[in-house]
Length: 206
Image 1 (cartoon, rainbow, N blue to C red):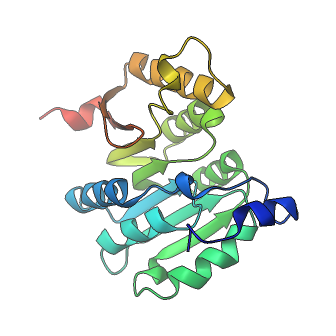
Image 2 (cartoon, helix red, strand yellow):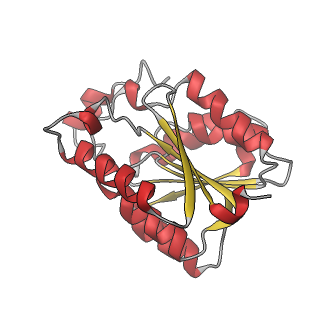
Image 3 (tube, rainbow, N blue to C red):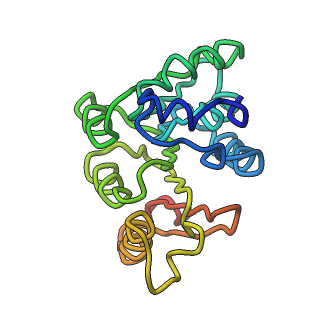
């Protein structure tokens, strides 16, 4: 569905906010890696920023227990009904809750609701990654022994270029700031476009 959907036409008609492209989907390899992380950590609650067509939300849901929850967020209203249509075909789709709106507003609302999550997957606007991270860490969204999983850590190699677009600049800023954050341990895994894993130091020590 993601490959054949008429994204360019929809964008030209003003039905989507962004000119969405199939390459924005996490893909099978990264999806299975994410599913392993959810399963290995015995997660019960997952937060995803950047839903797109719902693939990564669904693979996370597949690894959750029967009463597990995935809250997946996106800014584009067009995607909500599209994703609901497809995840409803899976027995795991009932574990998924969709929230539409700017990601910063959504995560601040979740923090106001005192919600927390075992796995938080960042795959939204790269320019705002550092802002997302600050809210997650400072407002209690990451549960004890939780893990932040960050997509596009390489951002097509732009983080190593001398010149970058706004998203590449945002990703470089995020990588550098997280590496200097004394609260956390982080590792960069060279899967697809780079996946950065982040955990609190106290959750890494025996």
